[in-house]
Length: 363
Ligand SMILES: NC(=O)c1ccc[n+]([C@@H]2O[C@H](COP(=O)([O-])OP(=O)(O)OC[C@H]3O[C@@H](n4cnc5c(N)ncnc54)[C@H](OP(=O)(O)O)[C@@H]3O)[C@@H](O)[C@H]2O)c1
Ligand SMILES: *[C@@H]1O[C@H](CO)[C@@H](O)[C@H](O)[C@H]1NC(C)=O
Image (tube, rainbow, N blue to C red; front, side, top):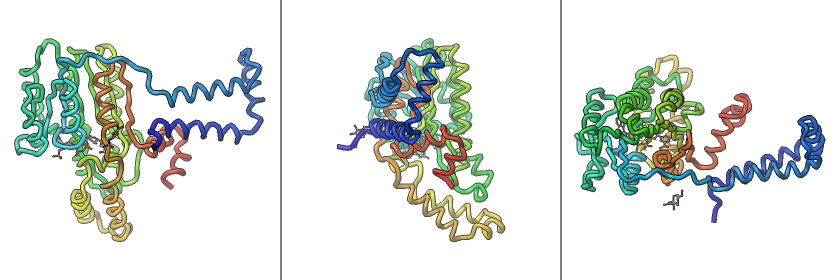
């Protein structure tokens, strides 16, 4: 029996803090004693205080989350974008099973895409599939009309929007054309903003939820992922600002920041990586081709290809996070479902001084 991800984190955090205490040596009690005296605490026995601190730490990290209650699901309606495959497809089926009414936006409904067909074959009037390219202004406004027409009560609005549609790109900055930066932002960033703005009036009526699929790469950079990171950092900024504006309206805005689930979805395929590679090399300038060299380039592409089968194959932690964001009475602002390695990396990259974090992971 392995430890759960939360337990692994608890063990790591506790051993880290114990290690720090030892490293600081026996000077720590004196320091703490002085501090407590300075603050006027009665706690004279400092070791008791240390034990207490550890106890609180362990409780915070290791205990299951305090139950936060849930909203009634019956009759709640949710729109999800990008339901052709991956998280979106799985989420549409999961939410439907829980009793939500699901509007599943698919990029390829008109072209009889597999995901759209699978969802349509369920033949449920609580699961409606609609054509929706998030980059297409007209399709998005038609989707709004469709949703309005099929809402149980348009006056009560739409409970949730899940901005899930997304694409992924890779490549060093000098190999990445501006068109690539624009293409990925078009879907991940402008798509998210477009859909959110169009559906927000309905979500405000319902005092509902806006959920954005971001990524751990919306919180930390990574070599050869600048085009993707730029788009995801943008979504993160959008969520932060919208969340602050929406307190007033009772709408909750939530960011989901999954770790590595590449193996579980279609986000990266071997073919896709190869196709991008060919294009990148062709379009790179002579000086870039010469300076970086083909061997380096081939090595980078091979590294990316090895990622195609990396990460967790089990996406249930992501699906559960989104479900919690939509159904908990008090959802978190951010969820980071991920394997322990990636969870720790994000904590370090976002909390330690940059020079130290980069020294650990990058340089
Ligand atoms: N998998 C991971 O490791 C991971 C980690 C962090 C965050 N994410 C995020 O999770 C979200 C879902 O990705 P996924 O991993 O489930 O990958 P996925 O299987 O490729 O799903 C993304 C879906 O979005 C669709 N899509 C692409 N462009 C679209 C557009 N313009 N309009 C509407 N739909 C569009 C795709 O359709 P086609 O298949 O037809 O292109 C696909 O069905 C993305 O935002 C991604 O950035 C994924
Ligand atoms: C996926 O993970 C969940 C816990 O997050 C676990 O309950 C489930 O059994 C796992 N599924 C598979 C197929 O391993």
